[in-house]
Image 1: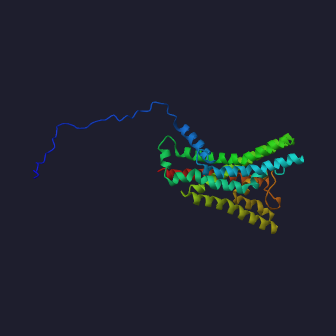
Image 2: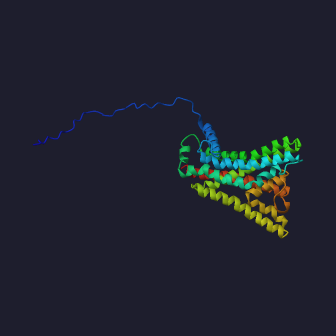
Image 3: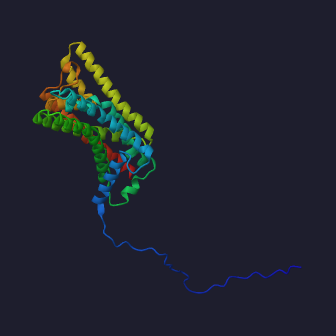
Length: 305
């Protein structure tokens, strides 16, 4: 038969029972690399991510494919020029990006959300700002990374054309001048498209929505502007054609390079903006780039709270 045992009361001792245990953590005595290093690291990682480097194989397929698609037509043009001993390239350096605008728009649509949407979706933006990096550093790094990726995408085929033109023994001075003008044009295009793409992508944390929105803005605006310009030409209102071109990113770049870089305009009838109208194009383009940066700053100040 079980015998019930009396309940024992815990023995209390007087004094403080607090204990401090050494669990092995050590302080960091190395160099503090600081804010500029963090910004450069964010820029380099974002640039690598724009081409899928450091990510899965699946993430590399589309950007690398688009890069190849941008360069292959340039290589074919060079081969034709060398084989036929042509006196000039089939396409001017300043025209190449305009001709390949669909590929560029698809690249922006795919990589702008990849750059910013995931940080918003998984709410990792405040983690960036818990370190020395600040809102302006984050925005500058992301903006510069996507613009650099776009410059690589649009500048590489121009380099292929330039090297091919020299191999075909075309005039060195003319080709160098055209190549420099083309680089200025694609640099401006890269800044503009990067700003627009990032602003649109930062509105939604859903990458799919961001891709669709960027494609819609870039393609619909160009289609609408081209249609209105064609209608203006049919109605003999050629004076309105340059002003309509202010409402699409692609036609903005077209207007700037046709006014100041010696490019042939893709506007209906070849009616590009005059120097005075071209100055308006430059101001609007620079204003859009600055406005994109400002909107991104405002967006990420809220996201970092």
